[in-house]
Amino acid sequence: MTTTQVSDRSSGSGPLQHRDFRWLLSGAAVSQVGTQVTLVALPLIAVVVLRAPAFQVGLLTAAETAAFLLIGLPAGAWVDRIAAAAGADAGRMWCGRWRWAVCRSPPPSTC
Image (cartoon, rainbow, N blue to C red; front, side):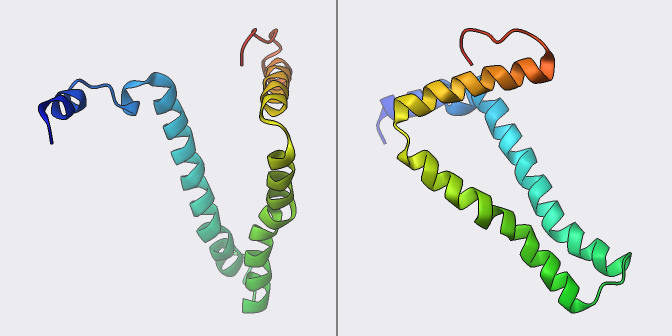
């Protein structure tokens, strides 16, 4: 390891120094925690509260992943076929519309 590499690391220019990246990382972490809690808690609630038999708990567990199979995979294939520039422009447009619908504020020039 050279001294320039050591000084680059100690200068604090890593991704955690950027506020936007920290927001992205914390949002992704909260989303993953919620997903994992749901994967455990939903069948547990079905067994404890509803006294569901093993077959129904199995169906419930299978239904948890059905949304990914039915929506996520086709959507991913569809997005892959869209040109990168057209997809980015459409993303900015929809981001602005959602922001307006949620906040009732005019969309900014960039998303």
